[in-house]
Length: 248
Length: 220
Image 1 (tube, rainbow over the protein chains, first blue to last red):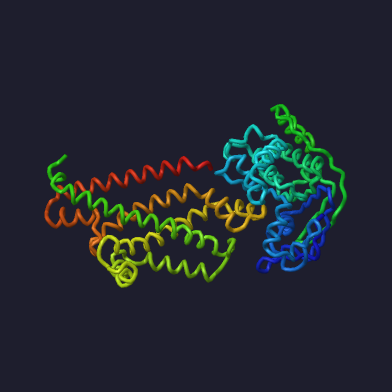
Image 2: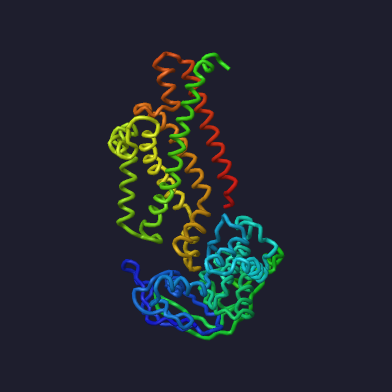
């Protein structure tokens, strides 16, 4: 589904990505992990050309993005969804309008829009919050709105840039659950960049480890399931006591 | 009503009308030209969507130069230009030319500042969704910056009123000019005070309206 061929990207003198080749297969949940500065976010942003590579080719769903004219690239981006660490919702639009805007960008017929928006909001479980503004939502809910927005155009790929890194463990589980569902029931190929090992282990079927702008290793993994955390105060106490025991 | 106001009623009403014309034209110029210029300043800067050093530097320099002039000097300096456009350099219509020019320079800076407050990530999200530049502007930038744009316009309008009081030098009239000629130069201090009170009321009303609208439309 995604093929990166000998990609390189430099910032000033810093070589963020050095001749990286990588294939993401259809239907995968492909994790990218590495230390900060390893180039994982840059690599993800190269997949929809939010960053332009200095050398190499990017192919998504059979189209070589690096060869497209700007109009064709915009068209291609509509079938590549993306979500971000800080959600990047329009704060002055309601939940409904935030999802609607992505349909307005691609020429979906006006009368088909409301139904599609509601379908997406229902998928992420937020149809009851459609009139709310992002400021009134929790982090997890904001990220689910972002997912609904990304899904509105029925993308084939969903790029996730640290989607849970500003969320607490409970909401992380909530968002990961939705992502897994996007993959399983809609068949969307997912690429997920994270520095959190637990996140990568929980849902990824393949993982690329990056270091210093290069691929260190890519390996197939078995998703270990999403850990849900008990919100009961006793749980926190138990965890704290357990750690003490381990170190004793 | 105080006797002196009754006595000068006709002149006062006419002066207020002239102020409205001058400020009104300034507001139109600010919105129709200042807003696009400010948007271009934002879009053409380094690292932005339409990065273009030439357009940015040119507009930036132009806006700076206009804003460097003491306003009175700008009015005098523009007299030949005004004569070409309006046909005369004297009167309320002629006065609108320098006012429109300062209005554009003034508001475009405030527009640029408001747009700079929009989180970069929002623009990035728009681009990742395949938005055109036009769509980025109208469906994302202006929506997100709208309360700043309104507050900026409010500040600008109040400055325009202040600028318009100078236009007496080219026979532009207006309430400020009336206050000077009748109130100050003819020693009718009472009349001058009343004119000041009228202007204070105008400014209060404008600021209150602007602040209220900005608060209402801000959902951030």
